[in-house]
Length: 237
Length: 342
Image (cartoon, rainbow over all chains, first blue to last red; front, side, top):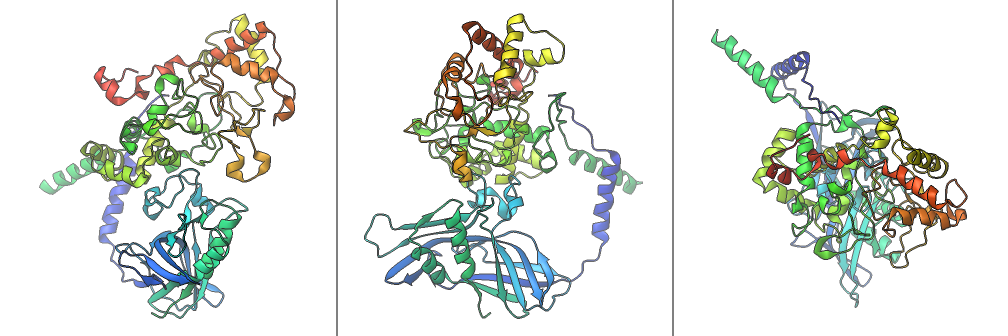
């Protein structure tokens, strides 16, 4: 190996200076914003978790986190706005953000929204990423590469067993076990869209499969991902 | 006049503060292009120095006792001598043999089963593994942000003193990328700077006839996953690549390790079952060729003299300059010896 620091060419430094001057001179335009807010339909606990009844079982959830990416506002069959940024939504963190804002010059009319529940294959193969995709957020597997698209952890209160824990770490970016799935919801134009996650519906589907622990990619993870997609709905603002 | 002077000073400060200290990564003659995408993580002196500090810091483990270097010693080409399986936190024993670390910019995947798809996220695996470093990665970042000495290093590397997961991992990658081994006697012979002895030359011919399909030059690995007929250790029950791919045809396939520095990286195989190179050669002479996933489909039966010749060639892959390069060593140890002497 030969180490040869190479200096930044003067032209690049000058370009940077011009950029700073240009940015400081540019008039800021007022932008419209739309808030995408996520909620869980289940009853809230003081620590930020949720509880719900599935049959005769009481389910306590202390972790409910997921990634949304590639948000689209749709009018008819036309996409009128796209936001490709990945957002980590943590519904069980009392201090965490349950919403994000998208800004645009002028808010368009739309009648539906869609987003990917999970992270695309390219990002899964791109090494260490920043922001919400930083592996320090606990949504990246360490024993193998790949993001956890949805993490749901809790316990079944009424089971007389030592193994009352339920853990779903849903992910997978390799064919045929691609777990990221599209959520499509009809809605009306608004500057605040409230998307709810029907925890009860999700748990009914997952617990009926008889699986309390799914923590790796595969057919079960793909199936659970679809159950999660089916649990999203638009709530009244 | 005063304004012009201030403007010029500002220009000077701007030029100095944004000057990147990039490292030019040189590709040895005849080597393929690296797999690592340098445009996503441009090599700089500051990031590599930070990564080197992190690599040797036991703070990355749960009880601050195990560093990356605990299982990847620079004096063993970053493998772990005398340990068949990795030796981690609280004397825990892992399930795989710690491989040597060098020429990683050319690797397509990492770990014996290729479970890790990118060098930048490789360090997460041992940090999180309960029998290796046993630490939550978020805690690592919190600990780093609590260390004043790291604040300066992160600032120099990223123009921001805050440690994040992305910055930490990319810095460790940068140090590992600088571990290039291409100064062996074999390399000198390829460059025409020296010639093999007759014994080494015979060994080279035997190597090309029997081993080179998997251990392809110049990296001495085909960077793929192959089955070499080893029986399954019933305690480990390690199925190799199949665990990652979910494909039963990948059962018992493991990543082909590079033979560079093979003299220093004992014990051998994914579970470290062979202590000596002679044991490995002996094994290939007795293995069932039907269980190999790649040619040759015959057992590699060699005479005693041929085995010695092959060993002589394999020893030409030893890169003592790589081992003795203090720029790869623990910076604290080097500082106590009076600094790097390249």
